[in-house]
Amino acid sequence: MDYNYLADLLYPDVKKDISYYEGLYKKRDLSDGAFVTRFAPSPTGKLHIGNLYAAFTSEIMAKSTNGVFYLRIEDTDQKREIENGVQEILDDLASINLSIDEGPNNGGNYGPYIQSERLEIYRTFAHYLVSKGKAYPCFCSQEYIDQMRSTQEKNKERIGYYGKYAKCRDLKIDEIKENLKLNKPYTLRLRSNGDYNKKVILKDAVKGKIEFPQNDVDSVLIKSDQTPLYHFAHVVDDYLMRTTHVVRDESWLSSYPLHAELFYDFGFPMPIYAHIAPVNKKEENGNVRKISKRKDPESRIEYYALEGIPSEVIQIYLASLMDSSFELWYLNNPDKRIDEYKFSFSNMSKSSPLFDLDKLYNISSSYFSRLKASDVYDKALEFNSKYDNEFYLLLKKYKDYSISVLNIEREIPRPRKDIKSYSSIKSIIDYMYDELFINPYDNIEIKSYYSDLPLEYYINNVYDINDTKEVWFNKIKDMCHLFGFASNTKEYKDSSSDYVGSVSDLCEIMRVALTAKTMTPDLYEILKLLGTKRVNERFNNFKEFLNKNKTV
RNA sequence: GGCCCGGUGGUGAAAUGGUUAACACACUGCCCUCUCAAGGCAGCAUUCACGGGUUCAAGUCCCGUCCGGGUCACCA
Image 1 (cartoon, protein in one colour):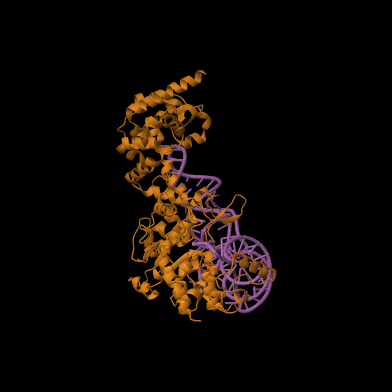
Image 2 (cartoon, rainbow, N blue to C red):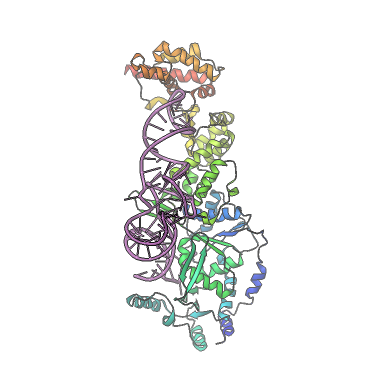
């Protein structure tokens, strides 16, 4: 058969040849050891943390080798596509701050980066394959395929379009012409030369050496609607975009033999593959499964936006999932950038990690504790402008004051670690704003030692806003005995029956009066920041509250 | 079912044939402390899925078994 004739018959519109595209998308001029990686999602809905894990892995490997990371949208299946799918992917990636070098919105010399805009390229490459006798049109109906499958299942044979089941493999040119004339829909299939009894070897960057039987299935390359299937598009695109490392989910492992054959047929060099295990999730009942957007709210990207977990934190978490040695390194080098760490595929776990929210929050609170107050303020302002207008306006109105509040026990060697997300800030400092201190004592449990007398004494005889912390606390200790409190906890523990409480209980009265909470940051700092007027007000209000509740 | 991948504490995991199986998160206790958050110290917990074999020596190498997962589309 004259394959050139067949190729022109099937693709009469193809005028260019593959060397045109090879010249157009030249080998990238990068330094030795630079990786070219990509993230190639389909616009079928929001991303989840597992997708992000793959995307981040690709990005960080490129970044840490001074390579290129690009985004390619795989939208060749219109049936599954959703509205705004591309935008959602872009938003999700932006929310964890991945730096995309090339993509639909970033430009680049290897585009288009959306597969539906590359159809002419695919047709040219399909034409090439047909002209080499490596692909052929298949007019088999869905009914035939279904029937073939059930026969194979019944006979316990391997399933697939191969060998004697590949009816269209050896169609005569006249038959093909006849079918085309009748406008019969057809797919383009690979004419496989593989031998199932021979091996093909994958040297995977993560999994190591894996042997498979060779592919001998005449897989569909181009659908009857003329759009390519993943396998075909992957080979063409990753070659033309000069990808050096294909990072993808391990579920692709089993289609490696097909991909290997396609690369071979085209005569293209193969990229290095890194098949990574998907992120899993443990259910309440102990079952482990792949993390899911629907079932696991914390797997959705919006969860982190809503919680106010910084993108850096997510990156640090993903990095430690990728390579647990990173964790130790980062602990010792908290000021370095993530990409300064030398990541390696071979350090990646071969098995699926379990998603661990506790660990993420732990990383988050450490992260927050290292920030400067003004940085926390800026980001908190930004966060609340989206999610909490009331708090946003307060932060904005009392800028310097708010920064001081956020600076309590911060920017010191062992800073507080109570903030774990931007959304948690409000509940930690809300009492510092009169506007949010409304009916504060409603839920206070009045303890036996609560009394307004120490407050009264404190404000009249002790309080001096200019005291240092040490002087202040010594004064507090001194006044303990006047009201039956032990001046230190040891004293109280030794003979608790002699006292109504200890100095910590005395402080608790002040703390509750000022903040309506029993647990807050440093009391001294709070007193200072609230200022004389408000301390007076709050003490008086608390006194009123105590009196009212005593009589009832 | 065929093919492929995986299996070290509750979790992430280190270990490259060589002490008592690191470290981090979580949990528990103690210390420190005006409460909390921290910080310090200690503890809990892995018969390295199971069974054989090789070796002076096995989590590590070999064989078998079991369990979990993936894949076998005109989805990606």
